[in-house]
Image (cartoon, rainbow, N blue to C red):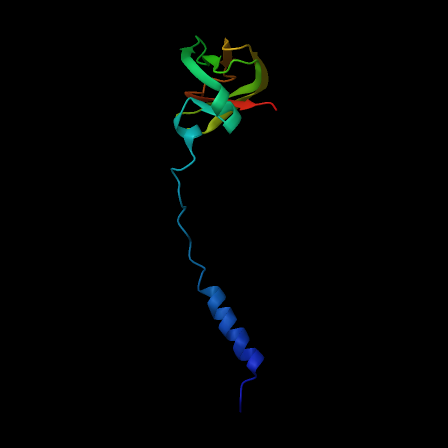
Length: 134
């Protein structure tokens, strides 16, 4: 007795589908992970072209929280508007709290100091992020 063609086709497709049940290792785990390595990152090409950081300062407060100050500088000869925030992280790099985005207006070649304070005493690391607003 012959097996119907559809049953045979189903068996082949089922076997092919089951062949990929194994787990896959992540690919490019160290690419595009600058936020895990740097304390100051620019989130888009516009910010990368226009903004730089001329200094970072970290202080531990008496209650164990940390305060961060960053000198954000406009590299262009025009007034720009950017948004800045800070993610505080524990020793392993996991976010413990995030400060909301705040708008920062920088005059031509101007520099402003922005400060952030963690909400709890678990923060040991941080990443300041800058993005353009328009």
